[in-house]
Image (spheres, rainbow, N blue to C red):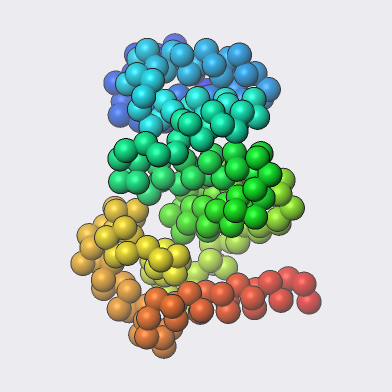
Length: 227
């Protein structure tokens, strides 16, 4: 609908706080459809009405186009080393990391790109960020990886609720309680309670143990798929 309607006649004048993100999706859609000139026009329009050209959303819009142009250096210029980016919300960081990893793959650094994309894909899955999850998985496939999208029931660890499973996956990735709380929009105290319950239910003593339990579950699922 965004593409068919050119973003909608009111998109440029919307006062909704997510309008910058809508423009990002519009640019992605145009690029995906092979309409790079329309993507650039949408990025220009967004700069004019959605915060200017130096915001993180604006830089990501331009990075999407640069990546389509296979301009690795331009992507890195737009997204690496900007003050404050490491304090962005989890989803914003994921989007930037995915684009940077894709740019590194363009430059031939496939091992680094693959490891980063695996982490992005897993973190996006834990957050329920379907768009980023799908884009990371798609990029991994181009690198020869075959990520498999688990069903909701498969993602749940035995004995844990869906929310506890999300917390467990993020904890296993090395995220602190504060980072998990910000990512899931809950209090740090709530995360502490979830982590305590997870340790108890998985019969482990640390986050390292949580990670080991997750890897064991992944291995058993993969073995079942290939049996």
